[in-house]
Image 1 (tube, helix red, strand yellow):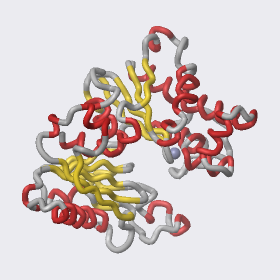
Image 2 (cartoon, protein in one colour):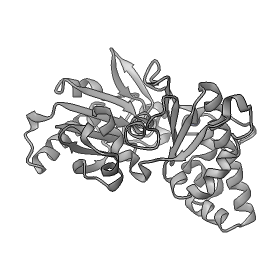
Image 3 (cartoon, rainbow, N blue to C red):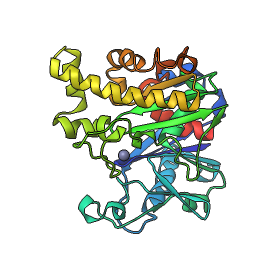
Image 4 (spheres, rainbow, N blue to C red):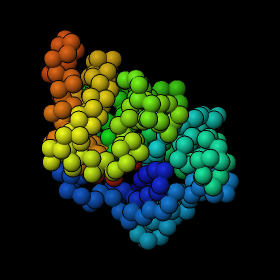
Length: 320
Ligand SMILES: [Zn+2]
């Protein structure tokens, strides 16, 4: 029995997965939540000492076990898919997410703690021998490679275009991690200049996330991303122009990933993309096709095979 943990800036969710994860057929994964048991979620702990998130996870695992009448001692693996970035302390992953740790940006950020990092892996390892922590986009990439659109690809990426922009990368069959498990933070790369109204939560002005993420769209255009894209789909000229520019920024980032890593395929998910995928996909493809053909010919951009359930299967993929 495995525990699957999903940590976001807003909520923490825990569920259990039974049996041999490899027995989960792709169709079962697509069909729904059959493989995951007893999912519960709570607002992410942000008060008290900086082990509060880890203690919350341990408590929620016990709670799910009890609600499912599962022996707590039968949990032999924990997969944690979490918002990043991470830092390492004595070989253990800690959270350094600006939406959880109030000490990073200081009191102006308004979080009810002064944590510069939040403990994560060490308290879990004190109880469970088998713990794997990955960035949520990396976990989603693993789920897409196992059950979704990226099956069979050794050179690929998963990109989520949602409240933020996250990327998981795989080259030569190896999922990239980097020195602190932060490989794939291309959402904080610069692809344009002069975006003076585009302040990212990371402090950069004019990076991809600061320009095109769901939270940036809302801040820059004073309307939810969903509303802007609905207007673009309806053909309203100003909205089309803004949405085209968002596609140019995202498309350049995708192109940069393809040519830097020699990728075959990228699958895309996240609410901004997923809810408007038919309109966005060809506009993103047009930023790649025809440029430097030796590197881009035959590259596939695809909607996530797991659809809007990628996140549900991300943590499961880590213990599968
Ligand atoms: Zn940024």
